[in-house]
Amino acid sequence: MDLGVAALAAAVGYLCGSISFARIVARIRDPRVDVTRVEVPLASGEVFVSDSVSASAVRLTLGPRYGILTALLDMAKVALPTLLFRIWIPEPPYFLIVAAAGLVGHDRPVFFRFKGGRGESAIYGGMLVIDPLAVVGTTILGALVGFIVGNILVLRWAGMVLLIPWLWVATGSPWYLAYIVFAVGWYLLAMRPELAQYGRMRGKGTDPTNEEIAIEFGMGRRLGRALDRYAPLPALARAARGSDRPAG
Image (cartoon, rainbow, N blue to C red; front, side):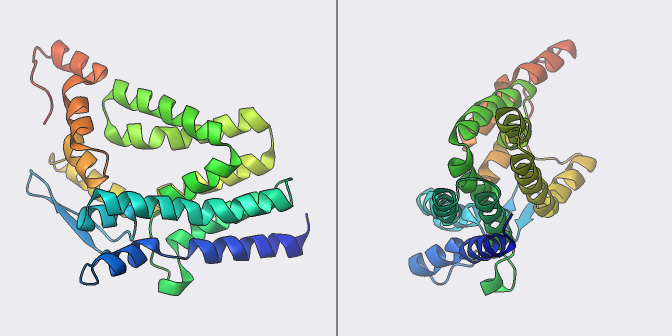
């Protein structure tokens, strides 16, 4: 590995990742909107708070259209430099370094006092260049697992975790494995504030329903409601308890 090229890849990836499209889109659409802190009241009376400067924050403050636009831009800011390096030097690890550094830049942007998002769009932006088939395959598998167990967080994140065995089996390359283990691990660590809130709510018996979580994460109220009502394993558990009442 050429350390000079590796350093260049890291610098390019990080600086591109540090572009905060959530802030840019919000500033252009409505400068009065603050996307650095979002509070979502839940039916239980709890308030879900997030300081993630991300497409989700834009969606909650400006609406789905602008949230989708932000997500696409966040994916592109990692995908494009990753693609350029892959064309220039097809062999790993250089384009993988770009993708990993782009994720770090997205979460810890140098231009905004290191306060950014959590990195989901950044990971999938890189993966669309690294292995687009993996994105499709693991997303479908993860969604299936999440539906069966009846948990929308599993539905959302199982596919990302499945990227680890997928890339290992598909490539057998330690570089690919190192990248995806780093990316998934970094993302889950970045999600600690939200996961801690969810854990506290569960501990108090006020955990949100799938429908409420779906609203918070921009996955669609209907999807969350369908999981609350029709997911197979929770339905079997309710039947075993002699109750047909869906959770939530």
